[in-house]
Length: 206
Image 1 (cartoon, helix red, strand yellow):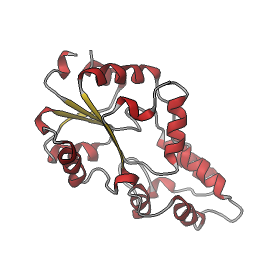
Image 2 (cartoon, one colour):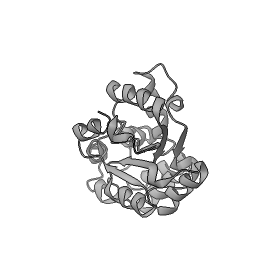
Image 3 (tube, helix red, strand yellow):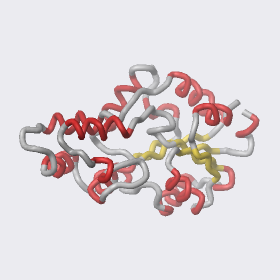
Image 4 (tube, helix red, strand yellow):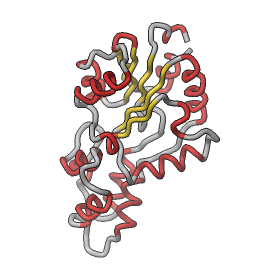
């Protein structure tokens, strides 16, 4: 791991980096429910305040579902909305979990994710499908936006993680697949890797 020798700490994003994610699958699922413009409300690059509030734990899962019930056609059930919302969540490639196991032996590792209380049970289930280790076991600390009340790309979120753990930003690498999150991390003084391909990601650790 010569490329990582300069770093003491690695902060990983979850969806799109460690967990396969497909935003289009959720867009398609909501389209099937009758919402033809869901991607205008929520996508990887931007989202409406409802989704921000949900990711910061400011509203409950039930409140979130109720709000979406207001914009879907009559006859759609809450379970259908949950299923559509979770459609984006894929699997954890075993190769990435094995990589995490190796990296956690040589570096401090953290997880910083914008997520919510509806997604996480599916995330844990998908993790348990491929690993006998607990989800938190390979990280010094797991930071989920809805639990900490903060989200990326706010610079204050990165600064809070740095301060909580007394990290040296110059020796910390942040990996994320959303450009706006990368920009926020850079403003906080972190080194970054913009995840665009598996090949480039794995090359970091070769």
